[in-house]
Length: 635
Ligand code: PRX
Image 1 (spheres, rainbow, N blue to C red):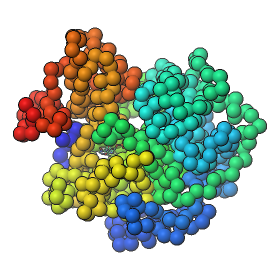
Image 2: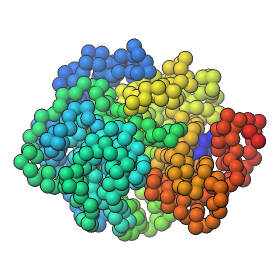
Image 3: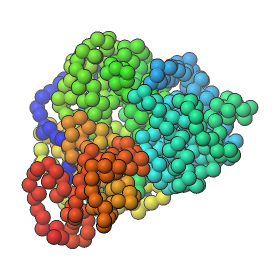
Image 4: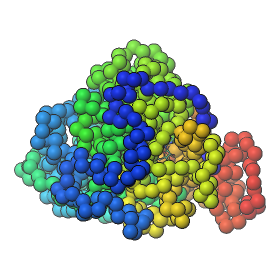
């Protein structure tokens, strides 16, 4: 059961110009792809030479305990060694690392030198509060410079961070704090969004009440409204950074290549979110190589990944990879349409953005306002565009290409996941494009579309997307749950040793990949990933609901929206008011993105004899389609 609107493969081609090909880091995709395929370890070892190491590795890949693969075994490094420490010893210390703009219009720019100092200061603050190598720190903030500083400071002292997206609410945050067992929480009073304040500290207070493992809260002053500060637990960021302890000199912790860098929670098929674990060594190599080659990063680029640092896209391609490459990154705090629908185009014009990377849902959202808004801005600095998060419908692709890219910018459609750490299927600028296809696998990656028995699908036949072999930035496990790592990703094609992506896909006659959508109980709403189970537990945590089922229904703007079906507890009557109350409740408990757009009250839910909800049937009904095979239905 896939959950996306899918446009079948087309034969519409877009070829790169000679100029793009000749100037690209990788002018010949086939050549590099084959080189990597012929000697995988040699290929990754060669790329790893471009990074600094405290000590080089002994073994590139240890597969003796597969699928618990290890990369660069024996290597000593730290993410911050490559993202900051090495740059401040070169001319790059004066280069802008970050250009930040707040939604109200305030601005901050930070050179590599200044960012390095801020990170050192905050790393010293964390150390002074007793945070040691291996301790988990939860970060719950908006899109500010401080979130970048906080993440890097954690990396610097070897404390894995767990960033929770600022759009999540009380219970979602509490669950993630609890699972990671974080003593320290870093947050902000609020964040600006569409001219309003998102009350982050208020949510954080409630989450800490529910998850008392936190004993220290560090709070950034961003929005300035009155908030509750608990004596002995809560500290202002700016107060701590003004203390003598916050010295700008700080030793970087020497880490093993395989030591944890961060945990990032993502939705899976059960209610409990999965803590995807990434490490210092392979992750820095893979994210920086993919960014450099797919987006052809050069020293004079101004790179703008318009995601949120709270998701994997932000981790890999706002924070880590651009800094490793010594690039200049743009970060914008707020909504694309605030105060007017040309906010993004103004940013491109003002800062001379050369590469823009965003999600189909944002493109569709901006497309709605017509061509006049972008046409009134000078977008001629752009040379490459990118997309991620869900399949891009060809119509949005063409608009992006024509109106934003002036028909000259290649569109880099990157397919990947929280678990993969970096791009897996993506064009390089020298690869010919078809709108809606992420094209071909990155060098060093082997993927296929297969049937349940593992045989390859024929061209244009729907199947399961699998990754056929390890890669450096693969997740190492699910935090605290090796069993789940095995069963979720490796069980289905165990005898072949393939990773199950959970997506349905097709491969066309030209070997181009077309991702259709999720094949499991994961819903993509506006590119955000949610589990049906999370929405359902949000609903049943309301006193009126006995049982609930959530499904994804295709939507033109958001990719998918959520429909929910609820059985009410005895004696409660369904009403329009209750529908609204339940939507608000889910928004409050899980987060605004999890709010169902439709809730229906029902007397029963279609279930298999073993009691599993048959969401396929609900979905077919919601979409007015045939329900199909119902032989496993209980009644
Ligand atoms: O279904 C695929 C979809 O997003 C899923 C991964 O979600 P998440 O872990 O939140 O990471 C999103 C950002 C990397 C995938 O299983 N997806 C991601 N990129 C694409 C995509 N679907 C189609 N085309 C893409 N380019």
